[in-house]
Length: 298
Image (cartoon, rainbow, N blue to C red; front, side, top):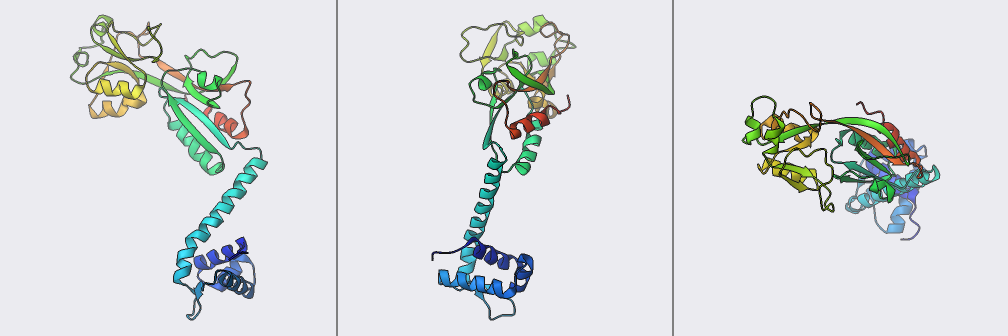
C-alpha cells in the first residue's frame, strides 16, 4: 500500500464531492483519462474498488465510504501544514498568550479573537483571567499582552493603550437592608453592613484599598466568588457592571446608590488598557491584536 500520493487522495475526494469523473477533470483542469488513471492506480495500491462504475454515474463503494473521512483528514492536515509553514515563513508567532482582568469586559477581546481565528488560523491563543490587578504576568513572561484597569501602577517599562471603560456598581440582594434605603445611602449606613471585597490571597493585612467602605468586610480573591456571596446575601459589594447587569435586570440583585465612594460622589468608572513590556517587542499578530484593541470605543 506504499506510494499513495496526495494527488490521488485529492482526485478521490473531488470525485466524491462532485459526483463524476468528468466534473472532476474540469474542476482540476485535467483530462478525464488522467482522472480515471489516477483512481485506478489508487485502487491497485489499496487493493480495493473505490467506485462502482456500472451505473451512469460512479458511486462510492462501501470501502470508499469508509476511507473517505480518512482521505479528507489527510487533505486537511496537509492544508494546515502548509498554512502553518507559511505563517512561520512570514514571521507569524506560533502562539500568543493574553491575560485579561475580570474587571474588564471580555466582549471587545472576543470580537478581535473571532477575526484573528479567520485571519491567522495557524496562531494558537492562550487566554487567562486574573482578578487582583498586577503587571506580574507581563514581567515574568507569562503573557504577551495584558488587559487591565489603568489604576495599576504602570511605569515607563510598559507600552499601553486605552481600550474601553468599565462602570462599577454597588449591589446587594433585593432583601438586603441597604437595598431598602431611601435615596442616596450615607457612608455610615454602608459602614454598618458587611462588605465583600477582592484582595490578594497572599496579602496578610489590608493595605490601602479604594473599594473598602465598610468597617466589617470579608475578603475573596476572585469576582465570581464575590458575586456568589453577594447573591447569597452574605454582604454587599462593588462589581463591574458587565458582571451584574443581567442580575439587576432580572431582579436578583438591587443597584445601590452610595452617597460617596472613595471621595467621589458617584461610583468609579475604570479606564481599561491593553499593555505589553517595552523590552519585549510584539510579534506581528500580537501587535495586530494590540492595534485592534486600542481602537475599542471608550
